View 1 (tube, rainbow over the protein chains, first blue to last red):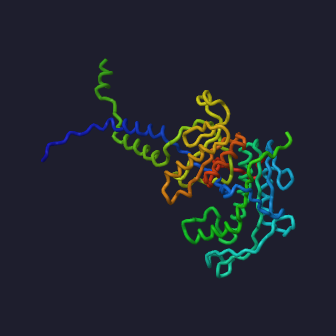
View 2 (tube, rainbow over the protein chains, first blue to last red):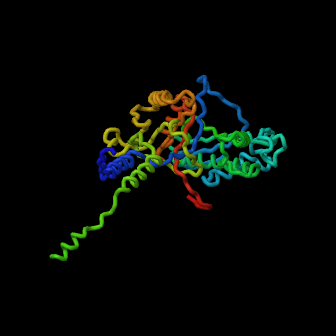
View 3 (tube, one colour):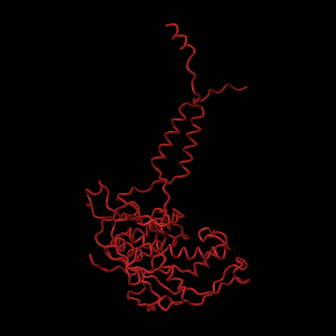
Length: 209
Length: 166
């Protein structure tokens, strides 16, 4: 038999591990980044202003003035009422002439994914042509601006979620976009309820103090 | 005297610390897995607003950070107390609309990404809630010009119970 190997003293192993542990505690962070993802409109190719003619009834103007007052479609409004207003704007439940034009649309869903859809999986219905125009002043506080953004996103998310619950008995957020069938559903619903929020180029809106 | 000596002779029962390194290593691995390296030192004070519709930022490697806020005490000595823009780890000292700095920053960050992910680059805007929109609009315009169009307004999750007024 070989000579007995002397045992390594493991007493300081704990100290070394503690040192490493403290190093990692100091240099790392645990916070998970969360936020609202939005797409910026691309910069126009030519420098000329592109004036897009939009029917007046298809636009909901959301204004935030320099004293953080919110005005929606010409009336002063509380932030919490904005979500309901947005939902009404995007769905136009009573086919009102003041609310956006609803146009017939066909959206392809995976065949057989829902009992409420015809066998070929094509949803036929009306989608809104509405656009929300969000405008703010240079002196608006960012916190307030984000709250308004949040309400608009919340409105669209609720519409999508309701649709998803009704047809597919699932929450919209729970759709797994890594599965092709669910991704098709996800994209389909996105087409039905578009996040049409346009942000105008910055300008001074002003407002009373 | 003999009483004490006898006691000493028996000796105190020593706690076996052989498993201590294992426990500490376990803790260490837990922290290594659940945390991320702090890459930048934030030189501006940022309290992000609260929102209900927040989502997690998925791939951290695609994300670059833009901070806007009032500088912390040490930085304020040299830069003053006016709101400043910080791109990842460097402060912008450019006057007016920081087109140049942001353009360079976007190009630099985009260069670091693999070809397939270049158009998925996300800009995380970590902006203090009390900053005025003028500064934010400037940054957004600069980002548009630099063709970095996916942005993420950083926000904390707000849990809103029904009927709560704020």
